[in-house]
Image 1 (cartoon, rainbow, N blue to C red):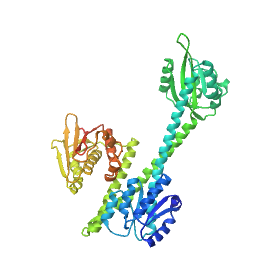
Image 2 (image 1 turned 90 degrees about the vertical axis):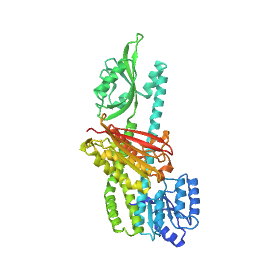
Image 3 (image 1 turned 90 degrees about the horizontal axis):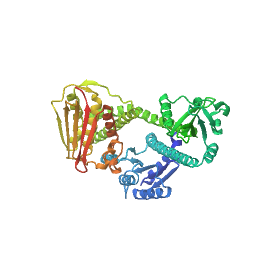
Image 4 (image 1 turned 30 degrees about the horizontal axis):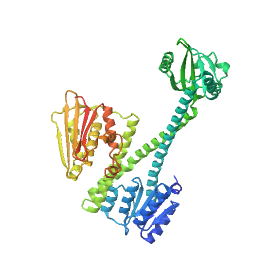
Length: 525
């Protein structure tokens, strides 16, 4: 990919108080972007940002700002920009080693930094990463518009079809004339032998009228409908019910075409069926467009999953080397803080990649449970202890009760069971304030053969109307999405895993008071 060619059309806001640095950096940025607005400080930048949106009805693609500036620094500017557009891509330039400021920026959602003096290679890497984020958002927006347009077409089609059908049933002559001029029409006797076809039927099927009349209507059957489908069709129309369906038919030259057909039984004055009439719309172009759309969607999904897989190798290296550096720099507080931030961010990103891969498996229904015998006491100890430090760091009261009567051997998938329990423990710690309380209890129901885990916190709680949303990858509000990143995807994965296991989740919660999640896993002794 030619990065400089790809980024030319992006709109940039560049903020820098130093005139010398502005000239040098502007020259570097000009090789990537054709459109660059420049501000001397944060206050001037925020005015430019508002004016740009009011004039164009869209935001800058990227905001690039210096961290240390008079009047309004890069941190305050970033906060204000994110209030206007929480999805804004922001790159922060900094020549200082104020790790507290950098951590504050990370906490408000800034993920891209460039150190001064700016190196061409680092600049290219950061711009490439940001461009990929913008590109993915564009793909998602385009897909939404395509689906919306497709739904609009289908609704319009349905509306037109129903209107035409209603009008044509008023009088037999008008009905026959309108159908022959606009739709595909075929009539059969009660045995399915063709008695009449109009010109449109001949044109789309490729058969002459003489080749069709007297033949079974199955002459154009594409062969992709099951016997049970046709049994249901004949049962419906023989019972004087209208039948409507999408058919994939085969023309004389072997090509396939799609029609949306409405089949009506025609009855005589005694109420006996004398023939059937099928009125059809040609849906070939629409179905081909839908097939192309699905292929495009599959390519995008595969691309995203492949990127996730590719991220695993560098992530493992980042986590491994960060862990080693933490040990070597144990006596250097500043360096240790920076390495710890890198490590924890790497862990979060690694967890996100794993979650994406799990969600993909869930969507493809390929997530399998590996059933083995395992010791729940050992697995629970490892799982619960894993999150103890996170709770203690927030000075929370971390209470654990594991019933000693739980059998020493259960049958199930220990990895997935502990993954789900871990998600809810982590969630409770995350949404409980400092010096709050998190309680975990695990018992075993011998009668139902269920392992039951309760995770209780006295955190922010969840309003009744929002309780179903948290299991469907929905953030409850934009404020929460910034202060508690990751809420939504992990709970959705946990919910789906429990469904696959045929377990259950219940939730009781009161806003500002806390939540109780009760998890049930069917695990035989």
